[in-house]
Image (cartoon, rainbow, N blue to C red; front, side):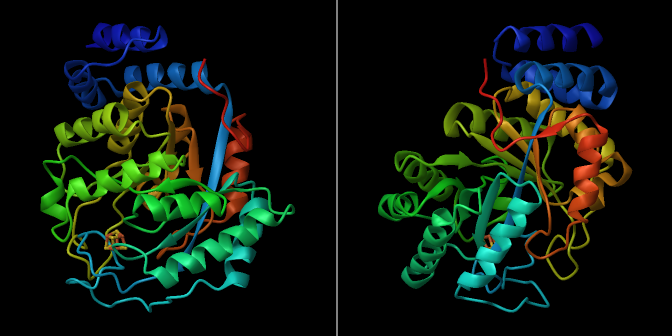
Length: 335
Ligand code: SF4
């Protein structure tokens, strides 16, 4: 197994793409030889990105009251109690303030996130107004992102014109496992939005959530779809933080070493993507949080999440400095 992982690692370093068979071998290595896997993931990360790390921050424009039934999500109204309050109109001042705080914390990107399957005309216009305000403010040097659910090509083009440069729309898991955790819309609905985003010229931020009953095969299928079909620029990796009252509220959280194995396997399959560790980091990785960069991550969320608090931004900045890593606004281009 050690030799197999080394062969795959050397291949990735020389520009060879990991095959599906090799990807499943890496998944086995995550359980049997994790430190060998971590070593090669670290070499691939440093070979492509040196010691650079990017930070991103998010804030809700609309929270709660979502008609969709994603089983992990506290914002769904389907089988989820208690329900958070819904705020339907982004407050310009709040979001501008949040964008300024994100920049102060070293975040190179700031994302506005709305609950719901797709934005209403009024909600989309509100996000466009806020985005233009932030994009025009030279004192807030952040790249703008949005995550508003499904978009038409015309809506995607309007967001791009307002200064939004990256759009987040996660596939969450494999096509096979998706209907087990979401029934109110389909995998193809999500892919259609991703095509609209790409054609509008925005960068694609698309990843998944782990610990929702998926198998390693599902994780590999998602990674290959992100690489070969979606061609994601940024791949956020979320790890279930079970929220009481949601259908997955009683799920067993993933062990820290399994999470590190997922990050490492994704690094080898997606050597050029910005791998972003997002929701569930603190609660699931605990003392092993700093390892996320050693095993291949290139960025993480800083500050609060949408419905749960994150840890103090100063603690994350100190952790990054202690690791000898450097926060940058933009990651180096792949060689
Ligand atoms: S993940 Fe998004 S679409 Fe799914 S229930 Fe939560 S807010 Fe709605």
